[in-house]
Image (cartoon, rainbow, N blue to C red; front, side, top):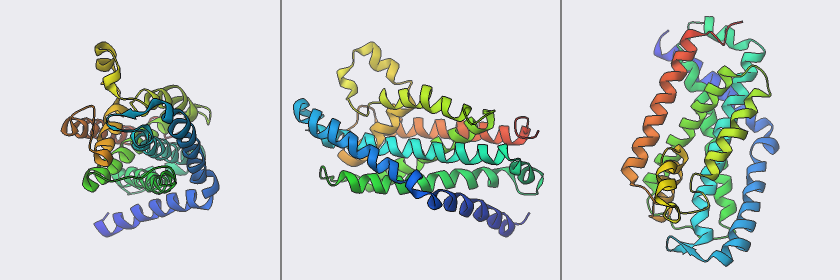
Length: 257
């Protein structure tokens, strides 16, 4: 295929993905705004007023970056896992695999679709957060970079989950038993400085630690880990997920039935 034809194929998949979640926006975009509002009220206003400051900021300001990243992670992931598994379930993905469209074009069409949903949700949650606190962005470049890298990483993770899933029940196992614990243990609601040395070391195995702290640095200018190291780890996990996703598409073992 020529580059022009690849671009047409990519945009076709991307438009389909965007229209899919915009068509049912009360189910895809609105729940995040409602859920995050509850977090802001409960953890930020009610509990946060008793906790006081953390990392030199009010507790509300401290948790807002983590909550925004939580919304980005869950939505980027869920968009790709549900969409690609649906294509696999109704066998429409087989038509893509036998077409001359390169595998990386197929993959990026789904992934960028998940990224756009993550960006939409990030904007909605950020606007909601402004009703509860004031945000002074420390580095717009870091904020944009972390959002794009994180949404790409978890869109790829959603794709991998969709490939291995055998039923619609399977696509909820990873978010429930893996993704949710990683989010809550990733420093969204606390600073790693509060942990004993052993558990702080264990936490560094959690990719969400680097995601949350890198984004918190972009918003507040503080982080429990080095910014360069955090970005490097996010990039490492993203490349790893991309390579493995391309391998799964190339083998087609779990895609062709």
